[in-house]
Image (cartoon, rainbow, N blue to C red; front, side, top):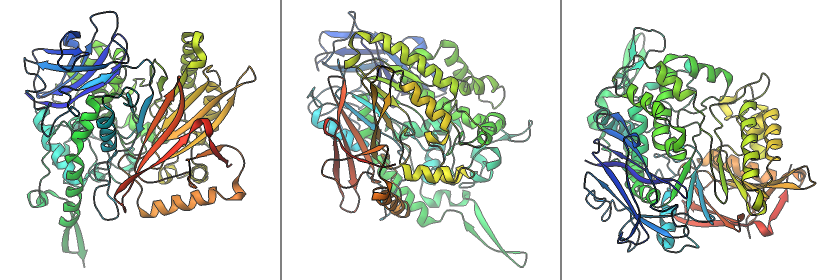
Amino acid sequence: MEIIGGPAIRRTEETAVYIWLVLDEKPKDIIITVSKSDNLKYPVSVSKAKPADVVKMGDKLFNCLVKVSPKSISFPKDTILFYNISINNQSLNDFGLLSGEKSIVYGQDRHPSFLIPTQHTNILQGSCRKPHASNKSKHSQYDHMRTVDTLLSKSINNLNKRPTMLCLTGDQIYADDVALPLLCGLKEKSKYHLGWTEELPHPKYKNKVIIPDTIKLANRDKTLSKNIGFSSGEKDNHLMGFGEFIMMYLAVWGGLSLTLPHYSTISNDIYKITKKRNGKVHFKKAKVSRDEYDEQRAIVKTFLDNSHKARRVMANMTSYMMFDDHEISDDWNLTKKNNVQFKTNPLSKRIQANGLAAYWACQGWGNDPSASTKAYKSTISNFLCLKSSKDGSKFDKELMSQRWNYTVEGYPVLVALDTRTHRSYKDGSLSGLMSSAEINILGEEFVRLNNTYKNNINQQSLLLLSPAPFLGFTKVERYQLSAKFIPNKVDAEPWIGSESAYKKMQKTLGKLEFKQCCIISGDVHYAFSRSMQIPRKNNDALEVLQITSSALHNAPGGIMRGILDGLSRSERSIFNRKKTPYLYPVNETEFLNGHTNISHLQYKHGQPVKNTYTFFEPNKGKSYKWVYNFNDQHIVEFS
């Protein structure tokens, strides 16, 4: 038996902690021991997995989310809690996870640990992590999960500095933009763990199927056309089968070891571009050359060689997540036409359902365990274990009708927004990232939270996870609005793209009686911060901070960097000064940065007081920081 995913600390509450892991065999038993002592004496919890905690998703693929309950009324707070997992009488040490290259422990500790704080004081946030992202020298970009790993290693026993929550705000995987060496590795593992070669419904003919494995390498774009919803410009190696989607998660999070084949072993399977002259074949050229393949292979290998650090991070810190478009496909549900195509075309619908099933298994279930009923889990498991493309309507429907929003109570309260699957579409405007009905439900949740925390409302704040920034970079948004008739070309989906949805969301935020709201976002591949005030009834205002951190490992290239620099310079010009403020870092003259980054939010007495972006400068090969002190904001106002 092998642990091929996790363990990862997911949702943590006073009365329950949920730990995620993926196994390649069905476990007879899983027992998790939690203690205040690293030697695990006098445990505060000894919990055994229930049958509903384990979901079979393939012959050698068992997805587990184990609920760990305290012996007493609740878990101790503000105390480091160590844990070990026994699977069929084998401990984490027996699986090689407590020492050596795969170790998920820090420093001199003997076991991984987590912390349930009375108030979160250190929260990390990042997004957009593409395995084959490269820099100008054609080497792998710096992965900021390594930054988190370093931060944890330095603060693992310091309660004041140790991060206690990691928020991943979208594009945890890239399903459309996949390097060919990586796809080859994923396909091999998919067949092994699922136990069959997946078949998908044909986009046109009911009595035919699509077998992704039989499509020539680097040629999936021909099958996944714009006419059925796939508008990505990088879809030659698009993920299609459920196995490919879930193997991607397990690989980028460090649990699954992949073999990246050499070019010579797969060259005959690569699609050949045929050039003709005078009606005769002049020559055939592989769509992916040896040099291109070898370059991508080296970049992906560097990324995967460091992915064990992401695994260690997630084994020692609570994590919450939300998808953006790349978990399914670039521009997923961007337009009404695209939305209809994904809902109606048999192949598009199944690929979307496969991606959502993998998202549920690796992200959604752990975000909100109570939302997944026994019947829901059975629907997913039963279909995946049928080993057939037929009878998938219930599978598709269940996954595509799910509400993925969730709330985590505490200080601060975290509310995560699904801005992809319940959008509004009106003629003459861009899509509303949430429908009117969904925003109404959010408003009801805000009223509930007001009542829950009414006795200490001034010590409470909201941490709102919106994959796309609610307050964006104005220059880019103006460009997107001006090109609304070609939204796929300019990634046109800002909140302000639908004025009605934007204003309704703003009004709904005004119902919140908390002192502050901090919106954390990703998506855009650069970092910046803004603030605004939303008036409320009693002549006061909700203070809103927008903290945008993107990307962990997918910084824009040279041309895009140049465009961003130019736009930010023009935005700083005296001709543009007026309304919504951007925040400037301490001792900096810039407000926007396109280097890879991660955000570190610090709270005091329930309110955000500081944010630090850690960037990596590839030309100098080192990190640097931008610091914002919210109690002494350096604000420059722009329209």
